[in-house]
Image 1 (cartoon, rainbow, N blue to C red):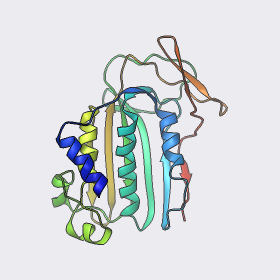
Image 2 (image 1 turned 90 degrees about the vertical axis):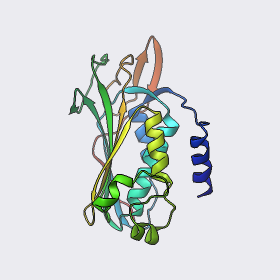
Image 3 (image 1 turned 180 degrees about the horizontal axis):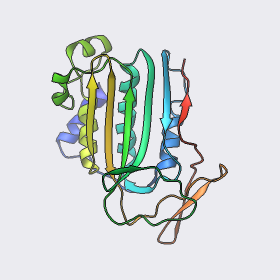
Length: 227
C-alpha cells in the first residue's frame, strides 16, 4: 500500500519518467513467465500463449513489466480455481497475426501494435463498475475489495503507465464469468522484427548493424500447472 501511494504521488507530481530502450518481446515474456514458476497456493493454472518471432519494440520495459505483473497478480487473486491466460499477438492494420519468421524481416509500413491479454476464470466485475475500474481507490466493487484486500491503486497506476507508453487498456468482464484485460502497445516501425526461433537455439535481432541477443526459444501455448 505504501509503495502504491508513493508511486501515485510521483505520478501526480509528474516525476515519473519514461526510459525507452529496445525490448525483445520473446525474451521479455520468457523472463516474466519464469518469475511465476512458483506454487500459487491455489488450484489455478497459468497458460502462456505467444508465438516465436515477436518483434523488438522500443518501450520502457520496467513499466511494461509492472503493467503485466499487476494484471496477472490481480487475475490470480480473484480466481479461486480455474485458469489465467497471458497472451501476446501482433496487431497489424486492425488484424491480429501470428508470425513464424525464419529470416530477418523489416517491419511493414503502417500501424503495427502488440496486443497483450490477461484473461481469468475468476469472480468477474459488475458491468456498472467497469467505467470506474481504472479510477484511483476503485477496485471493481465493495465485495471484491472487502474479500480480497487492497485499496484500489494498482489499476490506476497500470492505466497511467499504459498512457505514458502510448498504449491503451480495455477490460471485458461479467460476474461469475471472469475478466479479460487487453493492453495494446505501439511497435516502432524503425526496428527490425525478431528472428524466428529454430530448433530451440538463440536467435539474433539487428538494428542499424548493432547486435541484440534475444533468448527466445519458447514454443507457443505454454502451460504450467500451479498447486
